[in-house]
Length: 162
Image (cartoon, rainbow, N blue to C red; front, side):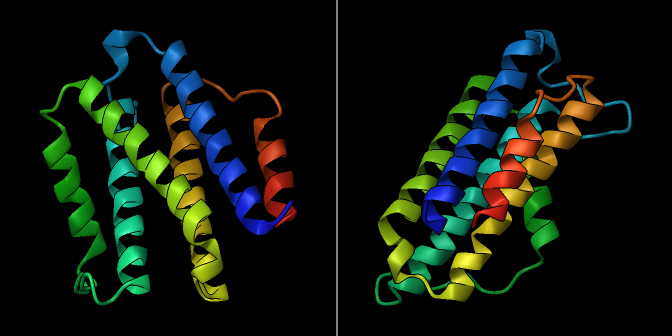
């Protein structure tokens, strides 16, 4: 399996684990924060969607500088907080749809443009996977959803093969 396949499969696996959490979480708890103030399930999906969208847009602009300008350097934490403020009033279904769309866009971008990326850029695409995984694990712990047996070992093997 080549690197982009490994990365795409790992992103898909993380997505499936988040979806399993969704099915095990009562509807009434989707917007509840964890006991330590952890992002709610809805906020987590919105946060991941925002950053996946940003990543795709950033690399699309890097590959085609004639069609768009790279966004100026900004305070990433500030952008993240602003994105969370924008998603809070949205219905859960809309945030979920944005998450699903951004996940698909990230995977489609990798499939279509992997060979156009430099080694450094390819390496940078592991960051969204780690980011997604970090939030999935934090969410599971905070919401008492537990771990899916063997999931992290499988993802560790996928990452080691890259």
